[in-house]
Length: 280
Image (cartoon, rainbow, N blue to C red):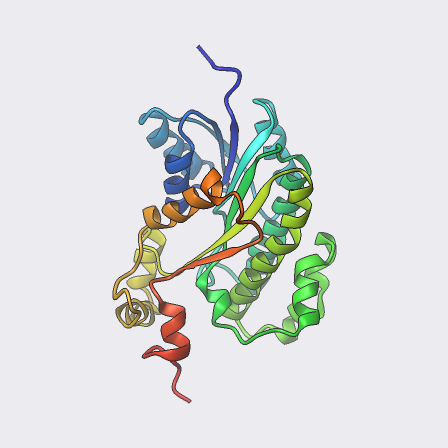
């Protein structure tokens, strides 16, 4: 028999990190799992439902406000949305510049905005950015403020994001992830007015099927060198990201909001002050 008072959790991006977080914090909850490829959502829903969870797969496209509103409406059929986990996105090797910006930058901003309008009191959200945003030179205070607070429908028109100012896919990805972090800061203020919290996790190299493809791809040596020369000396696991999410989403993290937690085995530190430092 269906419990009517289950807390509702919205999860986007049916990948290893989303699943690890959902398994860690989603027991006893109604989980709505969205992915652009419904077969991904179906596969993870099957794995989790066979392990005793309650997951409803849903086809959604993070780059579309209409699609984001549709998954929010689906989740609200089961009650107020109490938790958000956003693990959706594309990697720089998967997509051209326009797609990286439309999905990772614009789509994430829209999702945080729209869920922020309806999040339940006491609720919490995490979005997944990347260590990548930390390796880009600092932006001006004005550029940071624009990424944080520009109306979502004006984001992609910002001068900093125009073709002539974006070098390549990786630069687009770094800009998107920097925007995610700034957006979380600005949005957490609005979430706070509803008594809810919002944070960001910036993972380094985490072993997933996608990462294994990268290790075997044209940039494989670059990635292998990165985790070999970081203080941890290895890549991370999705479950280690879930450890951080569990803290951020629980009462133990009640004083943490608007924050980004970098979980990269020290790769960023090594990039600035260690053996990963680019040669001048």
